Length: 467
Ligand SMILES: *[C@@H]1O[C@H](CO)[C@@H](O)[C@H](O)[C@H]1NC(C)=O
Ligand SMILES: *[C@@H]1O[C@H](CO)[C@@H](O)[C@H](O)[C@H]1NC(C)=O
Ligand SMILES: *[C@@H]1O[C@H](CO)[C@@H](O)[C@H](O)[C@H]1NC(C)=O
Ligand SMILES: *[C@@H]1O[C@H](CO)[C@@H](O)[C@H](O)[C@H]1NC(C)=O
Ligand SMILES: *[C@@H]1O[C@H](CO)[C@@H](O)[C@H](O)[C@H]1NC(C)=O
Ligand SMILES: *[C@@H]1O[C@H](CO)[C@@H](O)[C@H](O)[C@H]1NC(C)=O
Image 1: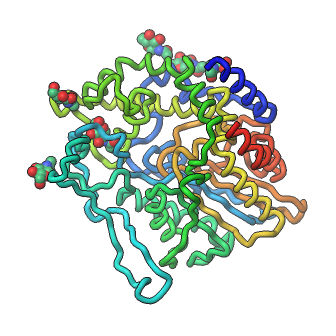
Image 2: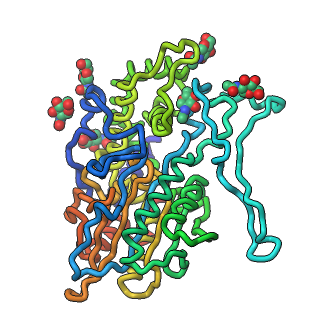
């Protein structure tokens, strides 16, 4: 073991020669005293709706995105040439790994299941019946009782986008259409030579795509969406990068900077465990971060379900204050993972570098006039949007909620004979801690050079991941 330590250090040193870490701003989100001992929820956690006057506020259930009402059109010197969007999927049931052994509420998805079927190009093979999944269990199968029932008799295949999450996806698409269709000359039917949609191997991103595309390109009936191999997809991402994994373990489970907040939260954990029945020494990850409790409770609140009570003692319930503390701690954790830990920028550069190389090529092709593609939309996860924010070294990190969106807008100025980039987070120019500052009409070359400084070439990224 000892011989491996200097090896890892030298790899990190090589990569550090290019990656420069710029610490985030100090805010309530990354203040551990506030997370542990403060009060209130760090945003909206109970509804997808935000009044217009507050739009832009953090809403875990439905994060702010580009809309006509808040959109700022640059001066007429600038022409929009290319737009690339990356978003998290919309609201869903919890993951089954984040459900308690047995839940005290029911959750039905009857009539709102994911649709799955094969379809040929023409003739009988193309004329098929739409097939929707409906989860069920049968006690005749002796393995049924070997796992917790979770939500008893549920018809949900966990996780799945809820019907309300599909409504949010449709609205998201329609809002983007209202801003970009006229500016980019997009038709009401998606033309794959001009616009493309990309999903991950996790089915929930395709569930979002169906509703989003109906809002974005309302006359599209059938669509082929892009998806990379589940062995190396850069969007989710799932490509193998052992160096990134070691770096992250070193600054989380291997660092008191991380573990302190878990020990400090012992009394909160004791209360949550007494309600859920989850063992203090569990192996399911309930005590290595607040992720599971956060997802468990936020998914319920966004679906207008109540906070959990113990099945054994129905008067023992998680209080709203306790849930708010979990939500503050969850946001503190994401700020730590992706911004506060000094190695977080290096981590994001390795873990999400492949996607940034693809983005870089899309931008370069658009600048060079070598591509007809005007609009590219990636539907992904919090595990995708977070390293995008980490890579760009956003000034104020949060845990990206449902539907969170980053938009890369490429403009041309004929007057200056140059291209410029604007990056929107929650619909507004992103403020970073890097020398690029706010990403609002920066020279596109500055941005491409930043990507190069973080990754180097594809071959260098591959080597850095695997050495
Ligand atoms: C939170 O409050 C407790 C009790 O007052 C205190 O012991 C602890 O140090 C505080 N935690 C932080 C991180 O400030
Ligand atoms: C962190 O939050 C605590 C409690 O709200 C506050 O007293 C303290 O000044 C904050 N620290 C920083 C660095 O902002
Ligand atoms: C929340 O946790 C409870 C108890 O562990 C579990 O039964 C339930 O399915 C979980 N719910 C969600 C939405 O994760
Ligand atoms: C679940 O289904 C079983 C078998 O149909 C039924 O006996 C039981 O009452 C149901 N439980 C709930 C909570 O709906
Ligand atoms: C822990 O935090 C300190 C202060 O920010 C920092 O210097 C150190 O590198 C961190 N250690 C790890 C493993 O992240
Ligand atoms: C309820 O009590 C049983 C028996 O003591 C125990 O096995 C189970 O974990 C408890 N469930 C919860 C949610 O506390």
